[in-house]
Length: 304
Image (tube, rainbow, N blue to C red; front, side, top):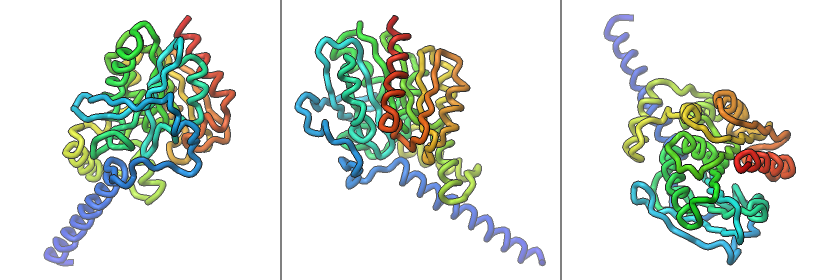
């Protein structure tokens, strides 16, 4: 092959690689970060809708750190002994991810704040932050619930799926002293890690350096957040709160190994509950007795 043909072949190969990375990066960001309006306020068929029209659950609003108006569902408890801030998952909702456990929380003396994540359901915003922005929203909800009730009540941050990654990332921030514990249910370790896993699982493609660079730039332009490699493992290094990690043994969306990695990396007071036979984000529904017992152990150690 002469030099001209070699250069042409090299140029075509380079162009194909760049075009491929461009296409894949756009696909990842569109499916992960951008929420079309038609996707708001939708619930899967298996959602527990018991509390959908519960008159005791009030709609509340809060302006977050960047001015985005976020909606929450406020379920106060008479003579409450603690506050719980609940953060749902990617393309999730408060009913989808917490509909089964609401009664247990409320009957256990918890004021419950069920947040609509930014850009999802009733909250404003065009883009999700894949936990990188939502961690700041979670901090604002912590402040909101403490102001609404009392600084003397212990606060727990509780997340499912992407919401789990959110509360783990929040746990490494400078938090008010009344925040006492974390419940992290089936969370991933970082946006980059879960994108790498799903890209390989669903499309059999590698998450290479060029793709990573394109996603970092595009993600920053859309959300203002630059570091898509920031992880729960990094955040947990700065966490001094007890953490309950929960994951289903049959989770094929966020691999169980990610909670094991979070658990092993965290050096503080911790418990890992693996729910046998559970798929993604159905751990409470699969084994409510084991789940409730683990949550009660967390409360007992934090409130003794």
